[in-house]
Image 1 (tube, helix red, strand yellow):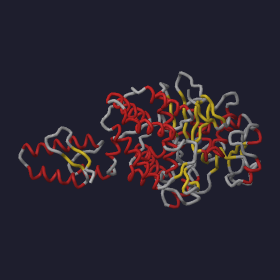
Image 2 (tube, rainbow, N blue to C red; image 1 turned 180 degrees about the vertical axis):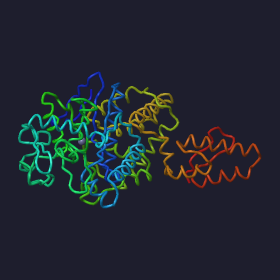
Image 3 (tube, rainbow, N blue to C red; image 1 turned 90 degrees about the vertical axis):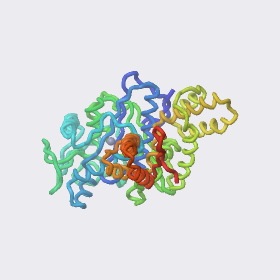
Image 4 (tube, rainbow, N blue to C red; image 1 turned 45 degrees about the vertical axis):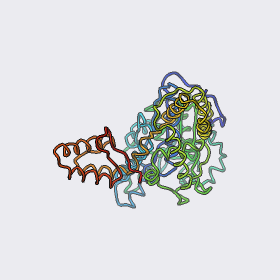
Length: 465
Ligand SMILES: [Zn+2]
């Protein structure tokens, strides 16, 4: 049984899943600046969900978009004197790198807004044809007053919305809460041609159009941070219901909580944003993942460096407990606990607590039972996307490793592959009695923290000192 909190009904619901493919859409980043801790949380917590659904033997079709055109990208790139694509591509690469360091599953599709302009225009046309939008001087706007269920997802009141700062003020809108589907280009701004005039899509419309193009008219899960509920998801829902009134756009709306820095929400406007990559480099992807696992995904999560240090220590205990064991689902009791915790709205902190109770009691176990427990703990952490090996591998930033191996004409892909080639090159020198070169290679390797032991198969390890 899987219970998840649906933001639309504002209640915990027993999830009914079809036996066909489960369709999941996660609102991805606007690629305007480097990923921060909050981006990490959203990608990791929904990665737990997707991996868990796969464990339950469901097929999953997972789409996460990239917003590569929007007001902020335009203004930031012009500040930096570069084309908007250049900024978007650079930041997109940074996002790709952190997703992979955090071992998040690659989406089945990762559409960019600029690649779906035709679909977006077509979707706007459908909304216009249903008389749910109008064209004004500055763009095409959604007519919110024509959509009776507007604000049902966020539960906001209209006057709150109007007085709120997130509504864009434009004189030529019929109502302040109406939002742009298509923005006409001002002088010097990037644009695409359309029947209504040169311009670019509004932010919300891309998700409605790309969901429709890639996943169809109805999806199972729509996910994102809870800061997206209003206006982004509210507006997405309005657009999609306007274009397809008889379809149930989203079955379950899922939202993760925000990261807090000393009780304050982390946001660009507060000026307290933390860059994710710095922490991944220092603590490893697994430790960051473990930090996210320690809070239930909907709760706000406190972020301090001390909490990361504590996460590293705690994760190390688990790592040592499972170190020599192979991954296998043997201990039925622990598997039941795993399913009960995950089934309870992905209660991962409870799961960790339960696992530690088992580990602490394991001193009383017979050897075979102990081994079964170790294998099962490892299995659960595998399911949740922990790599264990990577903890060691990520002691050095990848770019340093690439540079090091380049000197030996080795193209670095993984540490195992690169070390395999390195060792065989060195072996050749040893066979040719070129011991001086071989020793030099060993010493250089030691300088970057890798120790090799001669005469041992796979005889290398990270030097902990
Ligand atoms: Zn979206």
